[in-house]
Length: 168
Image (cartoon, rainbow, N blue to C red; front, side, top):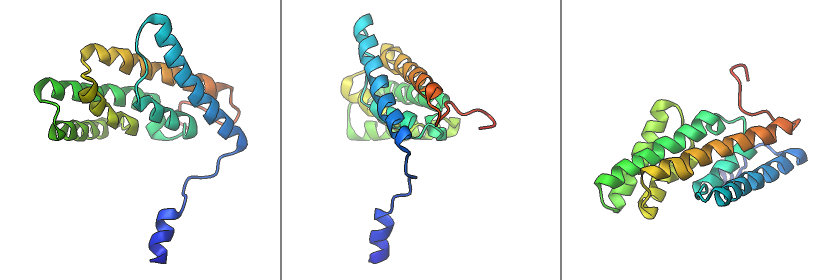
């Protein structure tokens, strides 16, 4: 029993430096603020709930393959497309939502653009009745803005670089 408790209470994530904590906190704040302020300025919705989780990856673990631009942008677009396609054909039911999430996960894995927060996109599609225009606003444009903010924040940080390069 002790081993079970120890295995579920052990933290494997490395401790962050104070500067990395400041960068993560500032980056997440700046990214969400940018989406809200730009959305308000242009009269477009650029924020959706999964973007909060995207910010966790972009600013807490920017070196993760799951945080890279292709994963962020591609993962959100593919997952939303799956949700829209299935929602067009199927009613909002438990099995259609579950199937859309499963297919989104499979496609992201197949295309090597897995981005865990994007797994929530089909759920948002079904419950918010999103359609193809929402693929642009907020999904594509919001994802691109998040990646740009991550690049800007990490470019001035001496502790991180973003995105990864071929030679890391």
